Amino acid sequence: MKKNLDWENIGFAYRPTDSRFVSMYTDGKWDEGAMIADPNVTISESSGVFQYAQTCFEGMKAYTTEDGHTVIFRPDLNAERMMTSCERLCLPVYPKEKFVDAVVRTVRANLDWVPPYGSGASLYIRPFMIGYSPVLGVSAAKDAMFRVFVSPVGPYFKGGIRPLKLKVSEYDRAAPRGTGDVKAGLNYAMSLHAIEQAHHESYDENMYLDSATRTKVEETGGANFLFVTRDGTVVTPKSPTILPSITRRSLMVVAKDYLGLKCEEREVPFAELPEMAECGLCGTAAVISPVGSVVDGDRTYTFDTSADNMGPTVRKLYETLTGIQMGRIPAPEGWICRVD
Ligand code: PLP
Ligand code: COI
View 1 (cartoon, protein in one colour):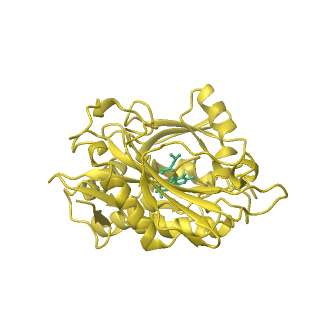
View 2 (view 1 turned 90 degrees about the vertical axis):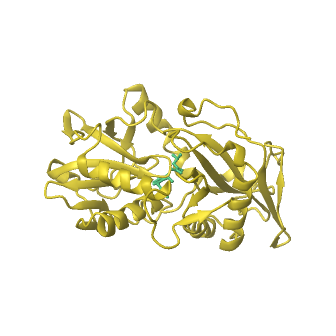
């Protein structure tokens, strides 16, 4: 039976559920893994994760579709991205099929926590890996733990769909040839001070620029950008130092194949902002969240949010993507992974 939660108002927060998947890497191999009940982890004080931030994670969602099934959106791409993150962080790769299987098992074991269709909420899935064994000199831990937990969540930004206010951060997110293109915990640790400061100044998020020249739009702390030009072209920044968002890659397919829009993935000079009619943030947590304004010192750039708090094209993208995820619109082959 579904849990008795106020699904419309759960917010985006950790809520431990009944079961999680855990697998250990020791003596150079992964064990079978198992579903367990304990949400806590007991670990050496000198583990790789504690000392040198040796950890990476993933994020995806499960939804209840219109016809009552539970589905996961493109978990195979999260599996592939986590393999890249692990390689970069000297963590052992968790094989793709096993990753998808672990995610499916975790959702199946927590079906009562999957928010109902139409509630606006979904089940956030958080796979992650840590360097488990102790280290003291700077080195990779020999042993690792892979874990998948889930948590029912509502919209990422408080207040649901509303025009967001962003600030051009004075801090940088990722160095050239650094770790910006993988989902390493360290990328988020360094963004905490910047996001706390932005929130304190009543901004919703930071816009990061490329750290080499500070002339190009990169991404926010937790989502990629998508712009719509005045002539209706969908533009998304191309950069080797941003996370390759699965939502953004999916939205570009939606824009091109479902909506027949012209699409460009290219460098986006910050100086081009006045040319952009609409702006959105895309990610698993953000889905596609409308941006109303970006503030850079004493200059403010504003975007169209006239279609019920979103730009008209951003709204079409939002409706189509969520329609595909909730089973109202046929999905491209392989996008939807059915769990029940
Ligand atoms: N960029 C950053 C820094 C993120 O943390 C995320 C969240 O996962 C994204 C982009 C969006 O990626 P995805 O659409 O795969 O969730
Ligand atoms: C996600 O969208 O899955 C993320 O990891 C973003 C995070 C800031 C919650």
